[in-house]
Image 1 (cartoon, rainbow, N blue to C red):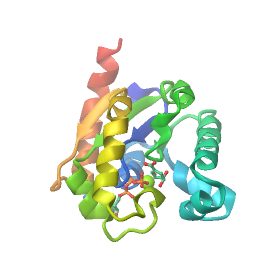
Image 2: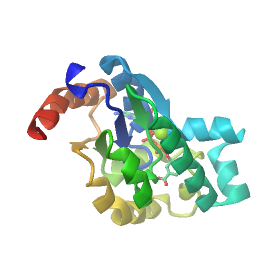
Image 3: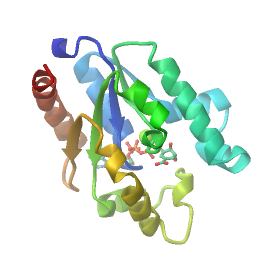
Image 4: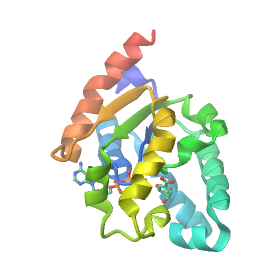
Length: 178
Ligand SMILES: Nc1ncnc2c1ncn2[C@@H]1O[C@H](COP(=O)(O)OP(=O)(O)OP(=O)(O)O)[C@@H](O)[C@H]1O
Ligand SMILES: O=C(O)C1=C[C@@H](O)[C@@H](O)[C@H](O)C1
Ligand SMILES: [Mg+2]
């Protein structure tokens, strides 16, 4: 899309909101390459995110996440699916704000329905994952809201529809910033 002038697009939002799923489709539509920071971290570390959290702890994971983000920011024409917690470090925003940041915002019930049988999110491996999701969203809502574009997602929205909405919104967003 020519209006973007090659700047990177970052998808932020809660676990299960669809950053990886939507990001891959969006990259194709934009003619961009797709990168997922969680996947890059897993490949670089040679182990799963669960294993990184178990062996080294969340803070070590967050350090790796910042390093990956800083490396990616040397490139252009990327659609980046970020980890749900990328917004937590103020430092990360110095990279995110060089691109266009899109918040994919799904209600906790939708996230829960999607992730209830998923064991790959370490922060949800506890007795009450629905409560954990709600607590995390409450802590991060104001941070996600710093995104340039807010896309609200309901249970019926297919990934292709979400991509269409994003494609329609991007030119408006860039124009209004002129
Ligand atoms: N719009 C959608 N409709 C139905 N299912 C979806 C939709 N978006 C994503 N999913 C499904 O929800 C699950 C979580 O999606 P995804 O892995 O893309 O989320 P994420 O935001 O990347 O999460 P994380 O931050 O943990 O990496 C996957 O099983 C995916 O297939
Ligand atoms: O929301 C979060 O804190 C996380 C989301 C995932 O993308 C992974 O980065 C990891 O499971 C942590
Ligand atoms: Mg993901």
